[in-house]
Picture: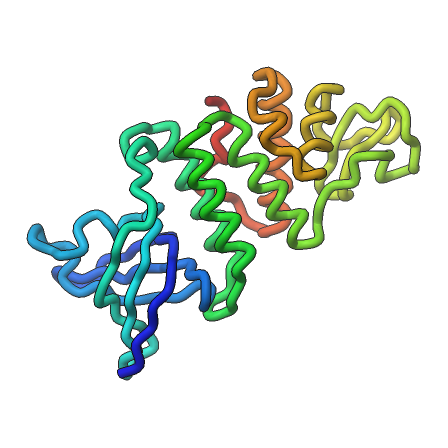
Length: 237
């Protein structure tokens, strides 16, 4: 059987039989794949907690006769010990994994998405906060070509007095055109900084601005996916 070695983030797991699990992986070299981890639910499993959602691992996989790969080895790349011990971080990790799973295609290599996922998991571990996941959502949308227009009213072109954002029409709106969510000047500044790649500069933003940005990011991601996310994007920390 062909042997595959790759780096991967565990997105989700499903029970299979009495002792096995199906593991959904976002790999660096192959995109999203599904594999069977045999015996992983037994106490004496050699994989332990390495194949739990949010794990970042170096995996060895075999291609069998079925559509599913078989996990034969998994070694941690990042431990993420703080994230696994903290409920807020765990919620942020879950929100990250859900978005990545929905945006990734089975068997379609997407190295950028893999690296963005690893980057945000490391930020959650090292610098947790209410804007980490919303900023990740917004950057994902921008990478997918559906970023928000934030410099002028998306409805009439007016540059002054932008007071709302409506993801359904693609961006910020002036007072005369406002149909979306109210947006303060500070929140607009945060959104612009994120769109310009200056995420680290705004991770410590004031709670009111962070809350507004988080709502915009959540609604925007759900509109793009055309589905509700099960896990809120870490709003309300």
